[in-house]
Image (cartoon, rainbow, N blue to C red; front, top):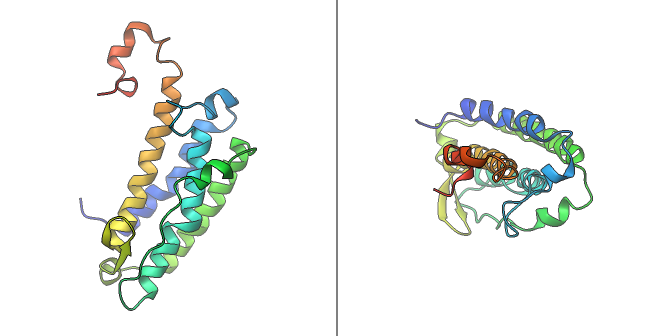
Length: 175
């Protein structure tokens, strides 16, 4: 399916309410759970999404659109969210994410991005030349990936308790 910015926005708008529905009001055992020691909890995932809003998606899009030639994009810090969420409730993080995402979508609407703009490029620190189209499509998939991760972590809390049904629960299997 070809990338369409309005459809992307429609999906991006749904991430905060989806996460609210999954996480708001849950005890810390649910929002601080991890699949393994080296993975992120739902609280850390929301924190990661917040920092992505602040330093990645819209800032990189603005840079790509403002530069005459393919600008170098700053690396994204994949660990700073771990300290960022310390001591914050899931409600605080969800509220902050809702607010910052609304601002990001407002900024995206204001960019008036058409096919010419979507074809503009930047130099990603890991991937090299990327288009704005790829960057924005990755934002949508990034959200969906982390929603999936949240549900997988949550399901894992009852992996043993499902007993024989586990064989039918793809979310609990490694394959």
